[in-house]
Image (cartoon, rainbow, N blue to C red; front, side):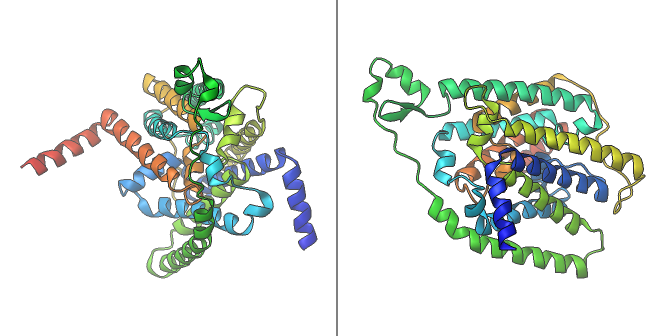
Length: 376
């Protein structure tokens, strides 16, 4: 058994395309599981925001719990063997805090304007041949490639090596006549020790929570199978993000930067997920008249392409091109790259909230009524 495990690990480490394909298959399995059993699409960004508003909280919470549980499990038992995670300091060393803030805000605002993130469009919409999703994918791809490539050369939100130190692009312009006397920027605090220390307790805590929720679901709730489907799909999704390298921010940026360091594994992972989903979704929707544990399929019917979708897609692509993080991988990475990733997600939610206030009449009305009550 140990010999087989070593051979698998050796093969895994020696070929970038193997984890990319496996990651794509796992993510696709997660999205197809939600569709086949509960008839629902997967939209991580919308689900997080819905949870904050306490809308259909339980299955979405369990899905996110599955993502975090598998992250702690792999971190505790397989992180060293498979080199699945960057060191926290490596993950943050060449992205300024301004980069985190700008990226998080644009990601939230863009996903709200576009009606969802890549799970909503590229991974679930394209298999349905949705015009909205094809449009979103096109503009997100162009914006993310352009931003990441530009940033890799000029570093507006990244740090660049200059002589004996590191600097941002703005500092480089300011000191362009004497770049060699730049003072080295103090490295970010290495949170590796903190991260490694909390992973085991978090794993046991999340495992205990999973068991408690399962027992509660079994004995005190109607058997809707929300828990089982949500947990399994969350675990599959989180494992796919980790194995495929989506939690490795620099790897993602190398897959988006058109330069000598271009990494094709991101392209392989994306193609694997979309193609597999296309096959699985068409089989499920054509063969099964209704989901296994639900009465009907709950899929978007609006396929209108408008300016809001295009602007949101561009903003989302710029955000990913700056940080290399999408919504799902940032949730999976929460415990590993804490606390910066917590700041990132809070800013992301503020961007979604602003987009909600700007473009949703019901939200504006609710906020107005709340303010008027407090004034009275």
